[in-house]
Length: 558
Image (cartoon, rainbow, N blue to C red; front, side):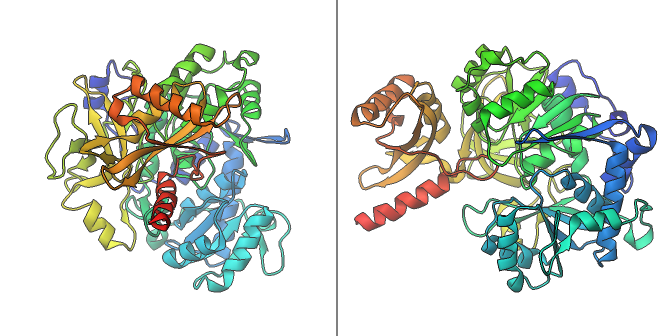
């Protein structure tokens, strides 16, 4: 399959890869027909998906199964009046129907809006009205059903709500509708056919500053994720790969459907109610994973377990993205398992931007080197390229000459955001980093996260990495708090490991530890102990939420 979409698969070095990797872009590519159905026709018994849950249930699906169920989904949506260009909101957690619904909507040409199961009623209302959502499909989860019921009256374009299993009053049963639909769905022709630049998928950004933006992707997004899957996560034909991600996250597109199936991998999904590190390790061992990808949060919890109890011999590759990986976590995982963690970096707006690709040696803490798909640079406030060692904003240049495959089309219905972040052919990611003389890139943080203290610019990650080398620290988040003399000072919000308890003595110990582990001016003048850190559903620490709470405290004190 892979050779149908790339001019060349194997490379001798990173330089060879960067210079010579090229995609073969088919005319009117559609992932449902050109990947899923091709597998189903040529190798109908090829395993596509392994699903398991907290209760020990396990189900296996072939590509023939996925074709059958996705065709039924396409016919079901079509029978309800959903057509090309219409929007459907999906809150299916990690049920197998996620794959059937997404592929079915791709075949139909409708726009899928993946959403986390943690949305509240007001979140659902905002998304439905912003994107003119006509239908919601959701998991058999009482909390989701309750929030959708509350939201329904205020969703202006909403026509149908559908749930797995038995349908409450006013709802449709997704399970029954899929069973009743025809398994035959011919590829649409004429005006109903999809084209490469047609809208396929919308992600809502996290919305830490203002309302979430709509990130619109076209039908070429799956091809952009070939680099993500093949050359970063290093999946291969028959490889069992698990990326721990809910279907509402952009990480789902990165690790649980597009690039993985194009490369011939078997997707393993753990449909968990709440993350349990012991259960995760049991699944990794039982299902004989070959490749694993998770956010840094998961690795931080896994290394707290007794890893000597588990057999990791089947695993050939580990990767991580979402938040920078502290070197201390990298070394502890490698010591316990013998496995490297190859970090990657990107956004909901595209496929992987930087990664520790196979030909380069991992430098713990570095996010690796740039993908060949994008013309990436680091620029200063004037848009000029930064010298090595200088922190600047990550940008993708020359997008007006040729739109990069895998990069989003636009912030949908938001010309202000487009003018701010994508002027004149250069997309500004809003993330900061620096490059070392050997070409490795080192993530610093969002522009909003950088702390300006007494004229110094301090990246939160470097302070967090220093804190993580102390045995008392399980997780931490470093943010700025206002200070009348210095403008801002460094604050550390810390989750302790089981063996430690909060105390003034421990605060002093952590401060002194940072002074010796990194430049002394970076030490946290304020330390707060908490039970858990606020995170997005994809595991990213919400530093903005911490800053907001601290600003409110500061205002009250004044």
